[in-house]
Amino acid sequence: MRNQAKIDVKICGLKTSEAVEATLDGGANYIGFIFFEKSPRHIELDQARALQILVAGRAKTVAVTVNADFEMLADIVETVKPDYLQLHGDETPERVLEIKARYGLPVIKAVAIRTLEDMEASKSYVASADMLLFDAKPPKGSELPGGNGVSFDWSLLQKFQSKLPIMLSGGLSRENIGEALSVAKPAGIDISSGVEIKPGVKDIGLISQFLSELNNYEY
Image (cartoon, rainbow, N blue to C red; front, side):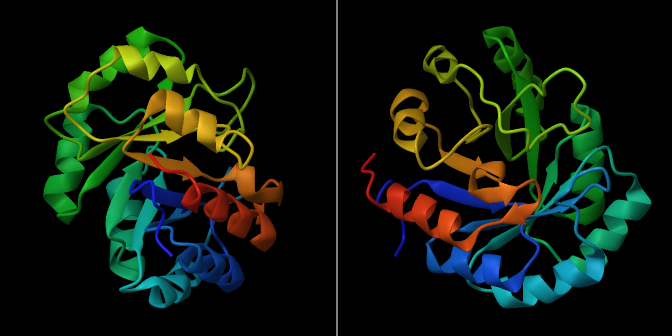
């Protein structure tokens, strides 16, 4: 059943066929594979390719990278054949354009948010990215740009206008998704740690419960 909220839903950091099937069965329309070795959600190319075959035609796949070079991106695109590239590092607008031109894939650009000024700075990607993903700035000392289970002030989105669709990420869970949607009204949501029993280990029950809660929410 697709969510009544009619928004994009991405479950990110999937590594098993069971988690992929639960995500698809729950109605998510984006599935994220993370290619970043420092992350507990990192997945190898062959493993991601096997899961991509399960997803094909049922949802869109997103390859998430952090400041990846062209060689790494080429390996991902050739092996996994994702529908989107998500750039979760310090990639500039110029770098985003280069990547789009080289691989011919739409790009989701992640932007770390703490203040309204951070949101305003994201406007520099309007001419290069296809979608923005607003994630909370990582806690001090974290080596991960995302998946830290922390959120930012969602009400900031009420003061911000973007020409690109915005996907909300950071600290989302079954318990707060209704509030997040009511306050932020994003075009999409992205969840990772909120459906895990420990970093990098998705829980089938939590995935199903989260997506069921989302299905019950009317935008």
